[in-house]
Length: 81
Image 1 (cartoon, rainbow, N blue to C red):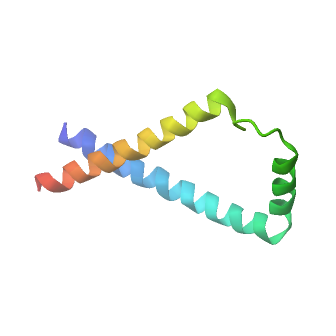
Image 2 (cartoon, one colour; image 1 turned 30 degrees about the horizontal axis):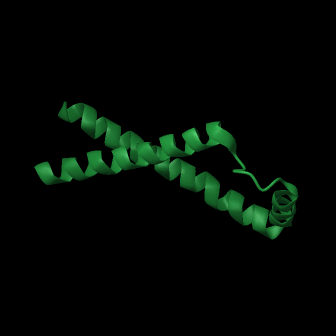
């Protein structure tokens, strides 16, 4: 079981690092070439509803659950040592 937790925490760290390595440059690119202005204007034109629907809400909650699970697993692993 300890091997699985160690493997899982390493995988979570690698996925988090890869996601940040992709998201931060993409955000900087979008801010530098006007894409952000287009996105803001498109958001203003949309209806004033929830915006991303039920599937988007489930996806967001699932992602948050994975982040919390990774934090819990990593913190448990540190307490055992």
